Picture 1 (cartoon, rainbow, N blue to C red):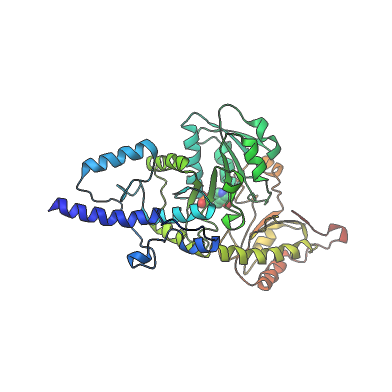
Picture 2 (cartoon, rainbow, N blue to C red):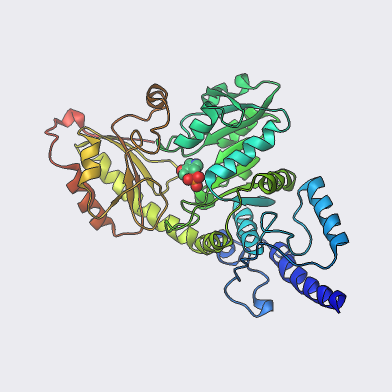
Length: 412
Ligand SMILES: *Cc1c(COP(=O)(O)O)cnc(C)c1O
């Protein structure tokens, strides 16, 4: 009787789980279509519309010989086990849907999700260090905590900071990773990903694509082997879920799954559900917020109270700007905009990088990377542009009685 029950439940679960990973072969679909369908291809045939949330921490099996074989297979390659997972730290069907969808959006073979963006970056560094390749070449600025993780060598890595043109010369026999952000947090500096990927040779390039999202830029197409997201930002999009994900080839994904299994930085299934839901509106949110941001960037650049505006060539919903006056007064002065760190939410957020997101970076290094003490970072949301401008303009105050020579300029 037990044998019969186990076979029934195993075959039912196997079918449901495999449907997440193996869509029927079909013609390529546009990004907007993938955003709402990827990771959900099996649902209609199961009579479902919303994806199920599987909160199981463990999965019953009456066949421990088969479990042993599945664990051996995972230990060998890190490939997703056939059938249901053994244990929640090894894999989860709801999280797998998000991974499938994100991989599809980034044009990558696979994706591996983590508890946060920093957990995702940690897994990549551990994956490289465990093969003896501890040296990292990186371009500043990076997100403050990524900078700190590398600079402090918390995971045993050693970093060489360089500019994009210096990457090829900075490579050593023990270099395991080259890391860039584009547009970078917080200055929105952009690098030519194709040129950087070329300079890396056989060393994997990790591009943090958190700011651009696959809607504006797909680094894998430019030669980045690893595409990292703080899913906490645009992928989730509503400021209510922490997560991270790496899109990459299946070989590297296997290594990342093994590290995730061994170190435990898993994404919670509820977070997986929310991130999958977030992806479905990602193209619409990013395009709408970007249009508003482009207009705000234009108005800020024309405003005498603003010294400099940074807005990326590829567009996007992030703006960085330097004020003539006291940036802390701007933060204190907003009413509609939320003064908070983080970004990519439906509501507009503003923060002072030198005080918060990049506080942990040495002040001299920070300024050297273009993060001036007068820089403010604005994450534009979905509010009406006129309401946002009224609030920003009010927060900028009337304190700068400036001559026309101080008028702002857009740098792209
Ligand atoms: C926020 C952020 C991270 C870190 O992500 P968490 O989800 O907060 O751990 C990494 N990179 C960039 C560019 C970020 O903005």
